Length: 408
Image (cartoon, rainbow, N blue to C red; front, side):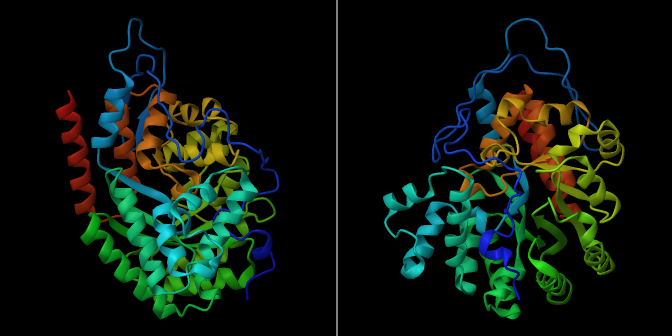
C-alpha cells in the first residue's frame, strides 16, 4: 500500500525536500522552457588530464585569445558518443512522447493538441512540475504505455548521440497502480529491444526505492529487482526525499541488493549537505552518487571521492530548475572538477526540464571552460562509471578517442 505522501508528492523519483525554494519564473540564466540555452564563447581552456576517472584541473587561465569558440564546442559535443547514467523513466517523457500517451488516454487531463501540450509543459515553478509529472505518470497505465515511454526516451537520447543509458524505473509505483510484475517485465524487455533496434541506444535498468513512500514501496522495489530481475537489471537505487529520510534507513534493502549481486547507487547531497553523501557511502555502500553536489561542503569527502574513484552523477539544468543550485554561474561543478572528483553528466528528467545531454555538455563546457579534450574527458568518465559490459565500454572509449583525434 502506498503511503499518504503520494498525494503530496506525486513524483516518487523527483519529490523534493521542503527546503527547496519555489520561484514563480524560470531562473534568469535559463531560457524560457522549450527554448535552448545559448552558450557563449568561453575563456581559454584549463589543462585537462584523464586518469582512473576524470581528473580535471581547473587552474589558471592561459593568456591570449581563446583558441576555440562556442560553435566548435557545440559541434564536438554533438559528435562525441555519450552514456547517460541518471535518467528517470517518466521524467524522460518529452512532449512528443506525452502527446502519444495523451491521445491514447484522452481522459487523463493532459492536452491532446500539440500547441496546448507545449504550453502545458512550460516550466513555471516546482509545484507546477510536480503537477505535470503526476498527470503524465497517470497516463502510464499498461505495458504498451511503458513501451512507448522507452522508445521515446531512446529516440530523444539518440539525438544527443547517446549510445548507452541506465534508466531509473520506479517499479513500486507501477505495481501500486495495479500493473502485474510480469507485465512490467515484458514491457521493459520489449521496450529495451525496440530502443536498440530503432534508435541504436542500449538500455539497462536501475530500480529505485522511492524514499518517503513507506516500507511497502521499499519492499516491493527490492522484491522486484531481486526476484523478477528483468534482462538488463544492473542496480538497486534510492531516490526521492532526503530531508527526514536518512540514507542509513535503507541499509537492509541495500544489503539484500548487494547479496543478489546488484550494483548500488543512491541519490544524496542534492538538497542536503555532505552528511547524507557520507551515509550513502558508508551505510549503503553506494558505488555512485546521484547528484552529490552537497559534497562541496566537505574537503575530506571530496578527497575520499577522488581517492576511491566514486563518481557523482551531476545534472546541471535540473539543479537550476529545482533551485538545488541558484544558477548555473554558481553551480559547484567547477569546484568538484577542480578537486579531482569523478563526474558524469546526465539530464535527470529531460522531458520535464527541457534539456538533453548535448545541452548539459555545452553548459558544462562553458561553465568549466573546457576545450575538446576536456569534453572528451567528461564523456570518458561516464563510460568508465557505467555498469555496462567491458566490450561495450572498450568500444565506446575507442569511439570517443577517434572523435577527439579527428577534431585535432
